[in-house]
Length: 150
Image 1 (cartoon, rainbow, N blue to C red):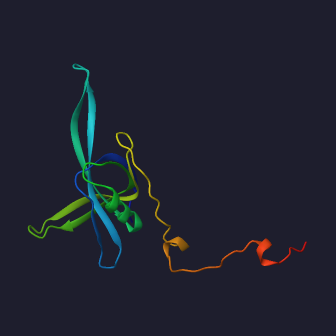
Image 2 (cartoon, rainbow, N blue to C red):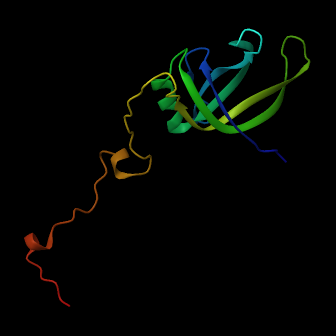
Protein backbone atom coordinates (compact mmCIF):
# COMPACT_ATOMS: atom_id res chain seq x y z
CA UNK A 1 0.00 0.00 0.00
CA UNK A 2 1.40 3.39 -0.95
CA UNK A 3 0.66 6.74 0.56
CA UNK A 4 -0.15 9.53 -1.88
CA UNK A 5 1.16 12.90 -0.73
CA UNK A 6 0.31 15.64 -3.26
CA UNK A 7 2.82 18.52 -3.38
CA UNK A 8 3.35 21.72 -5.34
CA UNK A 9 6.74 23.41 -5.26
CA UNK A 10 8.41 26.38 -6.92
CA UNK A 11 12.15 26.60 -7.37
CA UNK A 12 15.11 26.70 -9.76
CA UNK A 13 16.66 23.85 -11.72
CA UNK A 14 20.14 23.01 -10.43
CA UNK A 15 21.15 21.48 -13.77
CA UNK A 16 19.82 20.59 -17.21
CA UNK A 17 17.21 17.80 -17.16
CA UNK A 18 18.49 14.28 -17.85
CA UNK A 19 16.31 12.62 -20.52
CA UNK A 20 16.28 8.90 -21.21
CA UNK A 21 14.24 5.72 -21.50
CA UNK A 22 13.86 2.74 -19.20
CA UNK A 23 14.52 -0.83 -20.34
CA UNK A 24 10.78 -1.19 -21.01
CA UNK A 25 10.86 1.87 -23.28
CA UNK A 26 9.14 4.40 -20.99
CA UNK A 27 10.63 7.87 -21.47
CA UNK A 28 11.58 9.92 -18.44
CA UNK A 29 13.25 13.18 -17.49
CA UNK A 30 14.97 13.70 -14.14
CA UNK A 31 16.14 16.93 -12.57
CA UNK A 32 16.68 18.61 -9.22
CA UNK A 33 14.98 21.77 -8.00
CA UNK A 34 16.40 24.08 -5.33
CA UNK A 35 13.69 25.70 -3.21
CA UNK A 36 14.95 28.72 -1.28
CA UNK A 37 13.31 29.82 1.95
CA UNK A 38 13.32 33.57 2.54
CA UNK A 39 12.33 35.52 5.62
CA UNK A 40 12.09 39.18 6.51
CA UNK A 41 14.73 40.15 9.05
CA UNK A 42 12.82 42.28 11.55
CA UNK A 43 15.98 44.12 12.62
CA UNK A 44 17.30 45.09 9.17
CA UNK A 45 13.90 45.02 7.39
CA UNK A 46 15.58 43.12 4.53
CA UNK A 47 14.72 39.76 3.02
CA UNK A 48 17.31 37.05 3.71
CA UNK A 49 17.83 33.53 2.40
CA UNK A 50 17.58 31.19 5.38
CA UNK A 51 17.97 27.79 3.74
CA UNK A 52 17.68 25.73 0.60
CA UNK A 53 15.95 22.37 0.17
CA UNK A 54 16.71 20.23 -2.88
CA UNK A 55 13.99 18.06 -4.43
CA UNK A 56 14.54 15.39 -7.07
CA UNK A 57 11.81 15.29 -9.69
CA UNK A 58 10.94 12.70 -12.34
CA UNK A 59 8.40 13.06 -15.14
CA UNK A 60 7.35 10.59 -17.84
CA UNK A 61 6.21 10.24 -21.47
CA UNK A 62 5.53 13.26 -23.74
CA UNK A 63 6.01 15.69 -20.87
CA UNK A 64 9.55 14.33 -20.33
CA UNK A 65 10.44 15.29 -23.92
CA UNK A 66 8.91 18.73 -23.46
CA UNK A 67 10.88 19.25 -20.24
CA UNK A 68 14.16 18.13 -21.85
CA UNK A 69 13.61 20.40 -24.87
CA UNK A 70 12.41 23.45 -22.92
CA UNK A 71 14.08 23.76 -19.52
CA UNK A 72 17.69 24.53 -18.59
CA UNK A 73 19.79 25.03 -15.47
CA UNK A 74 18.63 28.06 -13.49
CA UNK A 75 15.10 28.14 -14.93
CA UNK A 76 12.37 28.86 -12.39
CA UNK A 77 9.63 26.20 -12.47
CA UNK A 78 6.47 25.14 -10.69
CA UNK A 79 5.99 21.40 -10.17
CA UNK A 80 2.80 19.63 -9.06
CA UNK A 81 2.88 15.92 -8.33
CA UNK A 82 3.11 13.23 -5.68
CA UNK A 83 5.85 12.82 -3.11
CA UNK A 84 7.10 9.22 -3.19
CA UNK A 85 9.44 7.47 -0.80
CA UNK A 86 11.63 4.48 -1.58
CA UNK A 87 14.61 2.48 -0.39
CA UNK A 88 17.68 1.00 -2.04
CA UNK A 89 20.87 -0.78 -1.01
CA UNK A 90 24.06 1.23 -1.30
CA UNK A 91 26.42 -0.77 -3.55
CA UNK A 92 29.56 0.45 -1.76
CA UNK A 93 28.51 0.00 1.88
CA UNK A 94 25.59 -2.44 1.68
CA UNK A 95 23.52 -0.10 3.86
CA UNK A 96 19.86 0.55 3.15
CA UNK A 97 19.22 4.13 2.04
CA UNK A 98 15.99 6.07 1.70
CA UNK A 99 14.95 8.23 -1.25
CA UNK A 100 12.41 11.02 -1.66
CA UNK A 101 11.28 11.97 -5.16
CA UNK A 102 8.46 13.99 -6.64
CA UNK A 103 6.70 12.17 -9.48
CA UNK A 104 5.42 15.13 -11.47
CA UNK A 105 1.95 15.34 -12.98
CA UNK A 106 2.50 18.84 -14.28
CA UNK A 107 5.52 21.11 -14.79
CA UNK A 108 5.49 24.71 -15.91
CA UNK A 109 7.88 27.60 -16.23
CA UNK A 110 7.31 30.21 -13.54
CA UNK A 111 6.36 33.58 -15.00
CA UNK A 112 7.35 35.47 -11.85
CA UNK A 113 10.63 36.71 -13.35
CA UNK A 114 10.48 35.48 -16.98
CA UNK A 115 8.36 35.32 -20.09
CA UNK A 116 7.81 32.25 -22.25
CA UNK A 117 6.28 31.37 -25.59
CA UNK A 118 4.14 28.27 -25.97
CA UNK A 119 4.52 25.82 -28.86
CA UNK A 120 1.75 23.24 -28.69
CA UNK A 121 2.53 19.60 -29.44
CA UNK A 122 -0.12 17.31 -30.95
CA UNK A 123 -2.06 15.01 -28.65
CA UNK A 124 -0.48 11.58 -28.49
CA UNK A 125 -3.50 9.72 -29.84
CA UNK A 126 -4.95 12.32 -32.21
CA UNK A 127 -4.66 12.30 -36.01
CA UNK A 128 -2.14 15.16 -35.90
CA UNK A 129 0.24 12.92 -33.93
CA UNK A 130 0.45 10.44 -36.82
CA UNK A 131 1.02 12.39 -40.03
CA UNK A 132 0.67 9.23 -42.14
CA UNK A 133 -2.79 8.44 -40.78
CA UNK A 134 -5.69 9.12 -43.09
CA UNK A 135 -9.29 9.41 -42.13
CA UNK A 136 -12.61 10.40 -43.57
CA UNK A 137 -12.77 13.73 -45.32
CA UNK A 138 -16.00 15.69 -44.93
CA UNK A 139 -17.39 17.50 -47.94
CA UNK A 140 -19.98 20.27 -47.65
CA UNK A 141 -23.43 19.19 -48.82
CA UNK A 142 -23.45 21.98 -51.41
CA UNK A 143 -20.55 20.32 -53.32
CA UNK A 144 -21.69 16.70 -53.10
CA UNK A 145 -25.00 17.19 -54.91
CA UNK A 146 -26.84 15.36 -52.15
CA UNK A 147 -29.94 17.00 -50.80
CA UNK A 148 -31.15 16.96 -47.25
CA UNK A 149 -34.47 15.21 -46.65
CA UNK A 150 -36.57 16.20 -43.69
